[in-house]
Length: 258
Ligand SMILES: C[S@@+](CC[C@H](N)C(=O)[O-])C[C@H]1O[C@@H](n2cnc3c(N)ncnc32)[C@H](O)[C@@H]1O
Image (tube, rainbow, N blue to C red; front, top):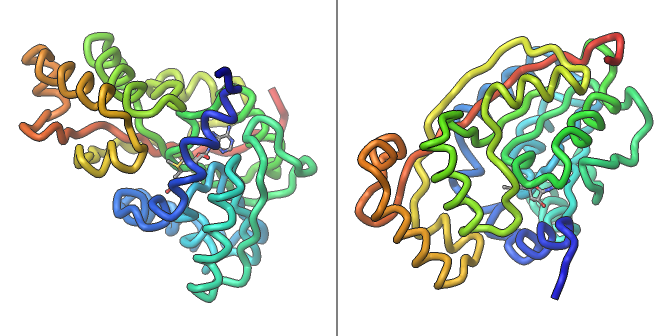
């Protein structure tokens, strides 16, 4: 059976929509607080949550923007976000099913864009960032948050390997330098960066993605065979739980597209 990458993403996420709305790793965090603080300061007219998943960025933006558009490849995710927004009384959230690489919006539609834990799944990272830039007004702010590669091959290879074993829709956790170079190519100016550590509870990490048993065994085997340096870097625990790095980037859509 062959499936396009976008169908692999949809198959991975669609069926788990409710789990992503409920996931504590996704529903809370200092990164969401920081993103909300930007929205509170900027009071955007139209805001976008790109790769919205369970909608946690959209819910935080909704109190500070006239309208918020949650955008995701997965129609099941967007249906779950509509239900959750209704339950929360957030009437200014609308949803859009679309790939980041081809957004169905005019140039300069949005005043603020948030994108959290999604870009590492995109089929074409550069195309998604170009689209994010295109749909933003010149001078508008984008906040990108994602798991990042430590940028050091010894650790990078371990991280990408366990991520891909866990989830076939994983493409790449980009390193900070890859992010900043790609954002510059897309026409963004990076204004701020902030790294954080995030602990992944092994059991819920694999359950959320319905990782098949042979892949779970392979992840545990990789962890058990990991070098002392790798085990220390990721803080690998006896049950397979570990910690990784996230990066939050504040960027401005440049006036002249580059
Ligand atoms: C981990 S979840 C998102 C988490 C969510 N943004 C949050 O902060 O809780 C990743 C989401 O990215 C979406 N996604 C992956 N590739 C995409 C693409 N190319 N375009 C749009 N959405 C995509 C998936 O469907 C999934 O819902």
